[in-house]
Length: 112
Figure 1 (cartoon, rainbow, N blue to C red):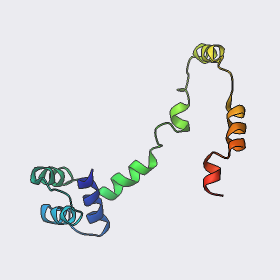
Figure 2 (figure 1 turned 120 degrees about the vertical axis):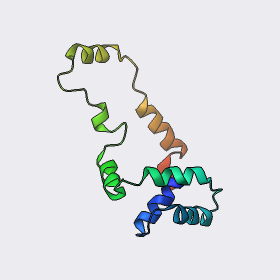
Figure 3 (figure 1 turned 90 degrees about the horizontal axis):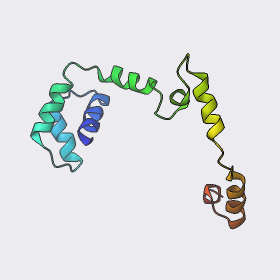
């Protein structure tokens, strides 16, 4: 992953992403540089517009977001009903919150 980060640093600073520059950034970060990985990354990024790739990646919702949880359009309503019917797990979140507040535990206590 540090190789990709080094390429992103070079891109952000306007420097050319080549083997020498990538190796210099990795050396400065204290990374044991593997020449084969540097060559492979430079070759892989040869025809890539990094700014466009970063913008495209930022536009994709994170896994587990609202889009991932929503059923596909035209989904089967019977499946949804089955899930509702089988979810007989009691809701204990209120009890847990009260216990956390009473004992002074919880993230809110960390920030005053």
